[in-house]
Length: 290
Figure 1 (tube, one colour):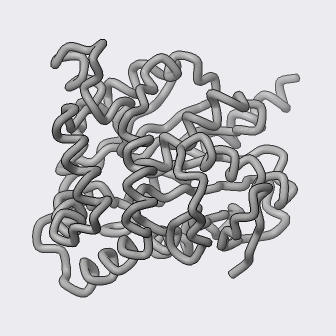
Figure 2 (figure 1 turned 180 degrees about the vertical axis):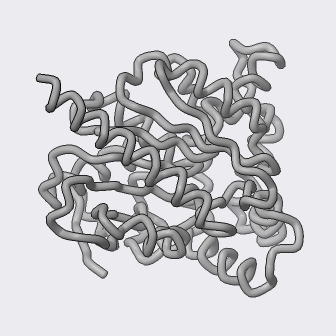
């Protein structure tokens, strides 16, 4: 593995797979309390002809655990600095769960000039029903918490209530998942310090990204799960509000929970590589026609 130090002194652990001279670069961002290692099962397929970068976001996995920077915007800045460090001028960016929020924050502050395409993996555009929403609006966006529910969840994480943390992980997985898989994923979750993780969680769930979606002007693939705790209809709503976006919903047998790349990577990899191939074919056609 490799290390990179951000401008505010946080050491990030990253992995660089695939051909170094590959034309396409794919950067994958994990979700809250997760790690880059959760993409490992998908890497052999994804990295055959594409350079794939995965990394532990600050506070997670093997990256440093600073006292500062527990904000989605800072995680977006980390991504920008990592791209600079690796000399990546333009990349396909994929974000799972909170990782998608980090990408939306990145677009909000840096635009899309360095983004070849966007892959949104099972993330609501709003996690909490905000005061300016009615219940129906919140449900459409995928909000899974109200204000009291958000406060209770964050407080439980802050005091490191292991029962709450474990139950939340289980709620995102297919029922009957192998015990060793669950144990490994829970171990990865616990690498996130409780209090810092609670601060990041509060910042994450209090974002409302709906106004950003219509301003996304790059090819976008939205991936949903039929049996995910994130309502599949909300992912269809996201795709409908991003111009030209495509939607792919994984069935239960395809690993259609919140972690398709871990529970059943083959359909996930097929969807992603097919999407990237179509973009490449489109660029080639445009070159031939010019």
